[in-house]
Amino acid sequence: MDFGPDSAGVWGRTVTVYSGQTTILAGAHNAPESDNSRPTMTEPPLTVEQLIALACDPALVLFP
Image (cartoon, rainbow, N blue to C red):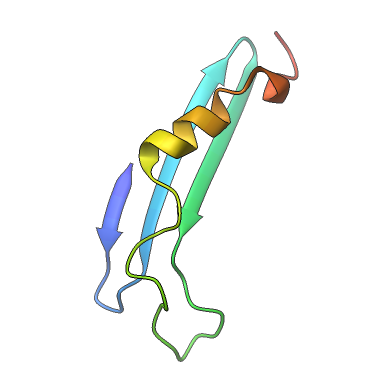
């Protein structure tokens, strides 16, 4: 899911991958470090495709 930026410019991307009996949730956000500042990046550091590639790594499957 790519949620796109909200009114403050914070943007989130999240993927869920099911592999065997393991569920892997991966996400990236451009959220600022403090509540009162705007993000320093215009979008999250990873794309949905990159998050999927990470989540599909066989090393993350705990229960095949």
